[in-house]
Image (cartoon, rainbow, N blue to C red; front, top):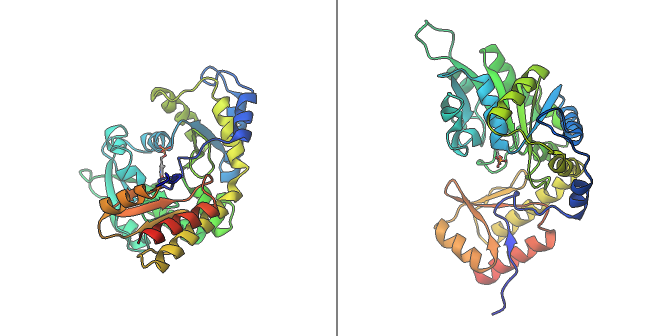
Length: 339
Ligand SMILES: *Cc1c(COP(=O)(O)O)cnc(C)c1O
């Protein structure tokens, strides 16, 4: 039997920087960003701030560090923070919200929609100002799209409503927008329509946009000045980072390409449903499938040269810029021929 060429759908982080990106990286104008400011990093930060409709932004090596910096700034030790069940800040950052930011996490049930809590749930969890011995709840973390729920999208009006409830109850708001670009493309709105009212937001350049490294954390100039200090403290001060920021700038030119990833995810989900699988229609680039035995299915797929991953007891396929429509059809052909 000939070896089938692998189709890697484990994550939208597996992409290879292409030639245009590598050329931009090699040509980047750079300087020491720790001492002063690297010009390419500065250009990237200004462009992201504008796209997000906020005043300032800071490049960080990873989304995890971007989220951690925001939590460290927003939380005092012992403060409780709220986030929907399965949020990346709760489950996928090694407890750093507690360990390093000193916060006490509380997960909010998805009582509004997959990946989303309702206004009532936020109000109830935030509580009201109580006696001096009360626990303080000070921060709401939102996630758009919500990864664990299957890349689900929060609309601008729902986002604005949740933020206003948070403000009424005295909470700050951090938006984990690792895949905010996907949400914006899926809705056909500018990314800035999805950040209204937040105190900070984190976006990834290393997922759908295909950069090898990097995220951006953004907010007010005061927030970003503090974020810069915190980044340095965490060892995230990068010297000639323009080489990396240049890749991010190329990625930002490709936001609209995410529509193809979303179409591919839909093709995959529809094809799997035709084969009798249980798969909800994806809103963006993440397809979650319920299978009777996850390990058996993962191994079976691997033998077919189809790489998927586990996510909360389900099978997760993620489409990205290195898989084509033809690859998706080939994926379905392989699965169909094996079943
Ligand atoms: C990937 C991801 C992150 C973290 O990004 P890294 O760059 O991998 O650290 C944060 N939040 C969400 C929702 C993510 O999917």
